[in-house]
Length: 144
Image (cartoon, rainbow, N blue to C red; front, side, top):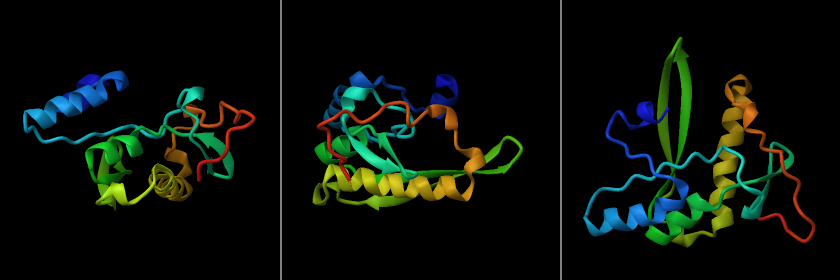
């Protein structure tokens, strides 16, 4: 999978190294495009809970945090199957200036777009991500 994702010059970076790598790229004046897979189940300690497909679900705060910290625009990537083994991807600008919005607003907007895509073609959503694996702990509020 890493080979497929990096064949066009993309560099795969582990979550724990993302901030360091972005800072290094900025210092070296390299263009930065950060793509984070936001549809996977986060660790329970993330504590960013939202309603997703009418269920409480945990989301990574990383995309919102990183976009605000570095002033990077936020896009939603939609992938559509166009034929056997063929896909089309489009990017929709969600926030040109993320610093004007809260992290919860950024994630909520992403969730709304993801829900729309799933409702249009539920057969293509990878349900094995198990978005509802965790239950929201007592005392933790919904973020949005």
